[in-house]
Amino acid sequence: PHQVIGAYWPIKGEFDPQPAQHRWKEDGELLDEPQRRRIGLPVVDKQNGTLTFHAWYPGCPMEEDAYGIPKPKDTEIVVPTLLFVPCVGYGPGGYRLGYGGGFYDRTLAALEPHPYTVGLSFAMGFVDDLLPEAHDVPLEAILNENGAVWPLDKKTRKDDPCRATAVKKPPDLQAVWFVSASLCWLAAYLGNQ
Image (cartoon, rainbow, N blue to C red; front, side):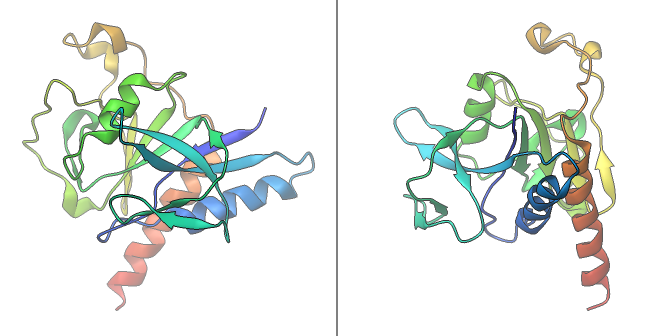
């Protein structure tokens, strides 16, 4: 089986995971036993208010969606096993702030099988008193330029019995490492500017 990372096209200063993902994809091809690794970018389903993920690769034909965000043009739908989610901000327990459209929350609530979810943000985006709303779906992990921020084990969450399972292990630690290393590199680079 091939591995699929779901990601996003960065906007408004969001961390850009694409170079790290491309490296992850290339490294899979160079293994002694090559692995087919794929990257999917979100495409808004306006009718359902959710996202589907379409295959993306460097040089892929792109077009703008209704919000002016580039999306793959005419590529197949892929189902991510690992999903990188942009975070404008984040708080305790793995909850994130986005731009308020609810696309990721609706998608995560409906996506089967449920991928391992990793939020990507910057440390300055931490909101200590962030209170999740009823529709908010927590992420399994959050990465920032300081490394990984892992939320509490979901077994301790009494308010959400349907997701009360042990914290899952990411399906591909190498992909998480590449993105984490990229965030750390970016922090060091920006600190030297």
